[in-house]
Length: 253
Image (cartoon, rainbow, N blue to C red; front, side):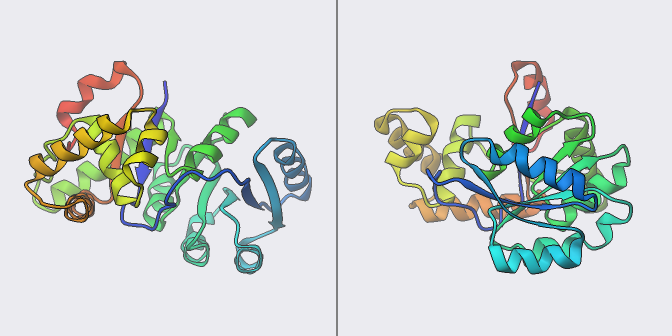
């Protein structure tokens, strides 16, 4: 089972899927690991490695030089202490943490710093490839363990901030997907292509979204989504398996 999360809804997003390859920067202390991972990724269609760095200091310089789409950061002891600087330097890129361990505090620290993806220690190369492609399209294939940690964090912060979650958006899961793509700047035709729908179906969804949110324009609807996301700690959870549908009643949708 896989969970799809979108982290930091308020951050800048790509406007559409693009046909060009995904550029990757690898940050890892062990050269053998860096070189092996680079060669494995370079063999994949649509992925190219543009650089490598041994630590965060060199990574920041490499990010500014190569402007990669995604930075792969190998989790190391005390790695959370400097990750925020890397995330800020890679403002136009997304950071994926590799080899995330069992410590819940590390997952939370990375998420709060703005990391876009997690690949656990027991994950395979195929899992990493799937994560890269998903994060490049503003999604995250997230393990149930990581999802549970993040949801517990949201619950804890909600309790601190008054105990009650924000009012749910009166939208279906499909309408939420459409609205997020509207917020990303996609046209009805682009949304239809992304979600494999008819353009007329997308138009109908947009009309229903405007009606349910009681707004007059697409920009107002997008603003409503961003406002809700800000209150919700910027974490939106979507589920891909029907096994998780019972959770929906407890989630802020």
